[in-house]
Image 1 (cartoon, helix red, strand yellow):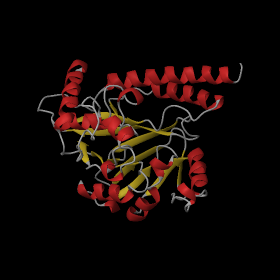
Image 2 (cartoon, rainbow, N blue to C red):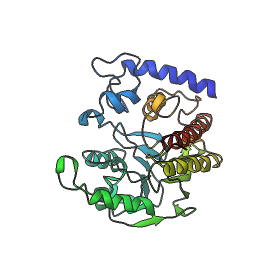
Image 3 (tube, rainbow, N blue to C red):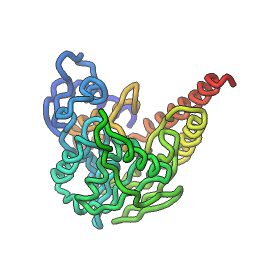
Length: 314
């Protein structure tokens, strides 16, 4: 399966050169870019500040899961018979686009029951207040990140403008808490380092036809600077490594390549999924690459601790 996925991924890169529309709704390459630039780099670097370019079309990833975010940051919509769950919310100026994408995939925003925030950075939680108003959903985050969110909402915005809108403190998630809805049983883990209260969600079940797969949202790897935070990131990476049975990684950013998920991110795999033929493996079902990514993250976290100790002269 692993070799098959690699072969499909190579084909997807070639397709990305010539595709100018479709599920992703945007050309794969901007003027002046080389034909070898993957979508991840286009959205993360080359056209990161091009708001209209970032407003990609939503696309179905599994029977009960859609990607509804902009190009650079993920927003995942998990549907159930009892209501729906949104993972992250993007930020302005993309919130109306996210709400529009939810409607485009045939889901009424008012059917969203929960908004799960992976962590407290603005690009992930900045749209939660507006989406909550449109849906009546509950908002979940870890205690450490609720504090961070409140701080962000109390500071001036970019260029000295008004503070960004942030959700008011709602559901505070603790280690090992669960959420049951419509046949889903989600389990939450606190994996800080990237922020004070990163929330990782395991136990998500996605379906490809009648076949179920176990998915995870790792709320944020790496660390925000400082020895204590680096040490947190080591523990968190080791904790995630202990989660068994992960078959699908729902990345919180769409990035792949050297600065993200190895072997292709959300957008590359979206192109692969569009051209998938009956009987071919699902490009998002890739447990081997998830394991590789976790191991690489563990190694990077351990190196960060050594770097921080060296800075401190230890």
